[in-house]
Length: 88
Image (cartoon, rainbow, N blue to C red):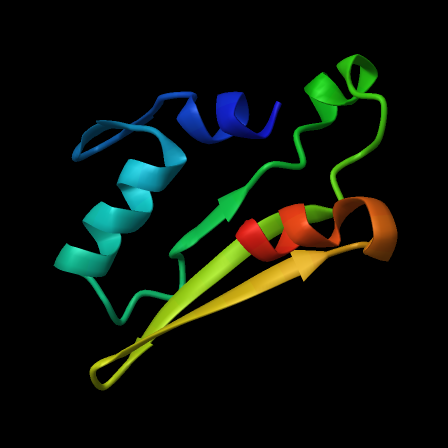
């Protein structure tokens, strides 16, 4: 479900973007924005999931020449899913 949710296109005044393309667009065109984020916690899709997403959003910001990424998660199943959360 994660890949699907990140790949859904949304309309913006600049055109249609999926979440990943929007992050890349904003980092390039407006790196000082506080709106650069992804979100995979989609309530309409929860009924199709065995587990609710543990890692559900990321926020990005640029400080000087450094890109920072903040991963938000509600829990971490250390033995079963930690490797996947690290990849996210």
